[in-house]
Image (cartoon, rainbow, N blue to C red; front, top):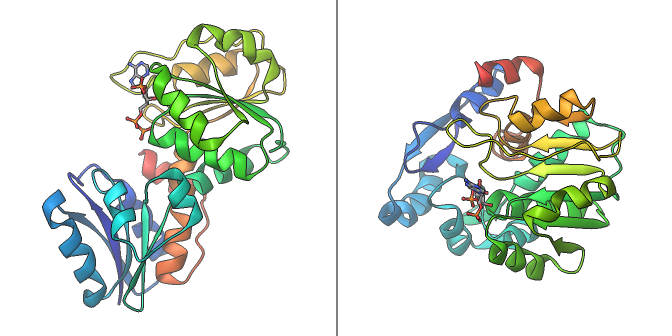
Length: 270
Ligand code: ATR
C-alpha cells in the first residue's frame, strides 16, 4: 500500500485527507492519505522517518512550510522562488521539496476562464505567502505587469524587489486608479473570509473583460466576488486553487493524474 499524508500543527482543520481520499476511492487505488499532527520540534525526525514507513511523500502545512525547504535534499525552482514548500516527494532516500500553489492558482484560472490571456496585466492585493505563489504563477506564464498593494507597504516592497521590475507597488488608495488598466484582479488577503471585514473595492471602472478572483473560499461567494458578479464581470472563486494544487502531489505519490470535477468541489465545500 502506498502512503501519503499532510503534516502540520494543528491538522484537524485540513481538507486534504477528504480531497485525496475522494481520488483514492474514485480510481480504486491501493493507498491511504492520513493527517499527521507533528509539532515543530519533531518535524525533522518525522520527515526523515516517513519514507522508511511506506510513505511516498506528504503535503506540508503551517508551521512547517519553510522548514521543509531547509530539510530537503533538492528544491524545485518554484518552491525556492516562493520561499516555502507544500509538497514533498520521497525518492530513493532523497527528499524533493516542491510548491504547487502557483500551479493550483493558474490551473483554477485556466479551467474557469479558458480564453484568459496570461500575458495581460494583473492587480494583486496582499503580500503574504499566498501572494508570493500567485505572483510567481502569473510571471511564469508571461504576465506583462503586476500592480501590487498591501496593508503593510514594506512587505509589498520586499516582494517587488524579489520578483523584479514587472511588479509595481501601489498604495491602497491607488487601487481604483489602476483598475481600468488590468485584466485580472486577485485578492490574496484574508479580507472577505468568515470573521474578517470585507475587501471593499469599487469595480465600476474595470474593463468588461476583467476577471475577478479571490483565493478565499470560506465563504465561497465573498463580498468581492458578489460585487464583481453585480457588475457583470467574470469571476473565479477560491476553492479551485485548493483542489488543483493537490493534483501534482497525488500524481507523484500514487501514479495517477487525478481530475478536478464538480463532485469533488461539492464534497469539499459540503
Ligand atoms: P497567506 O499565507 O494566506 O498569504 P499571510 O502570509 O499571513 O497568509 O498573509 C496574509 C495577507 O492578508 C497579508 O497580505 C496581510 O496584510 P499585512 O501584510 O499588512 O499583514 C493581509 N491581511 C490580513 N488581515 C488583514 C486586514 N484586516 N486588513 C488588510 N489586510 C489584511
